[in-house]
Image (cartoon, rainbow, N blue to C red; front, top):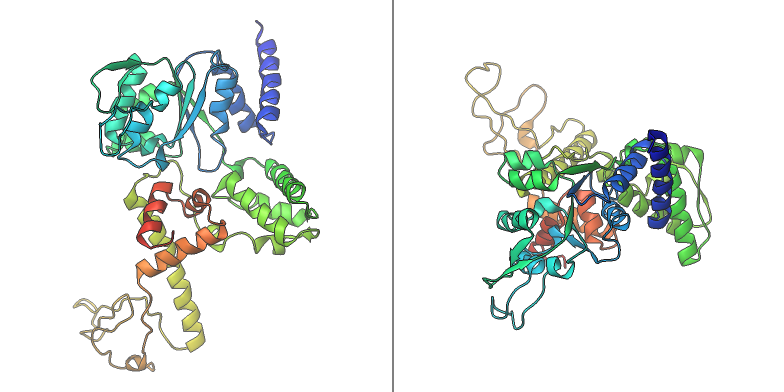
Length: 409
């Protein structure tokens, strides 16, 4: 078949896929990703879908399944990050009666249920290493064992995985098996972030606003030109998911009005406007997530200190450390002020500022600040934990753990 004919066929199928799955946008990178998914669909290879959180990666396994020979068999989507580590093997591969406490009956796993069809493993980087070994065996031989059984089971299944993590970086840090990475990534499809999709942002915002007005029978909002321009110049760390959330809030509280840029900015979380979104090059681990969260906390604390200094005039920021050493002869000795603002020793007057009169307030603990930020993120997202996790740039599993730790259920 001539190349131009193949191209025309792919373009027609891409438009069909957009209509069928409600994908809005004409960005070349998005269309290329859809065409790549359609082209690989008839070939029974494993596919790895990559891209930032909230870009719509979940549509592409469905496109692959729809245009494959397996389209009449089952399609099962599994969020690996939302299943506790202790039960994920049972969920994926099934278990026998009595295999563990609570296993009162034998149960089929997803790989058995979807036999002959397609299974989508979302957030595949969250799989424990032991489960990764089991998955590798399925990909290599189609064989697996139920938990608590020694009988080998067979399955004929196609695996499509997705992640917002750089798996090669995870491999380098011992978080992901290298052999499994190469098995999963026979074909890779990258989904572009929303900020790189140009005019698609305007199209999506109009669609979300229209859908909201129709669903809840409220007067629609109209975004002015400067509001749409502000949308295009915002980074959207939460991508399409965040845009939908912002538009729906705006459509509710500004129903029937023309929304300009100043009004729109009231509905964009301030924490997101100043936060640099994590890229797929960052290591997805509890330690890195905590560093990101604490980094935001410290930025917030610095802003509070700056405002306090402006109010008090000659009051120094309490978050700064003053440490004298032998190499600095101009500094008085024995000066140490802790970063939390509590002076360890009295500070003698220096210049025309009497530091001994400063009585810094005791700040909240980091745990209290972290708890408050999580609470506010949940509140902004109407309790939707997946959206809150995307806004905070942490995994759902980490968010669930912190919600439990801080009593925010």
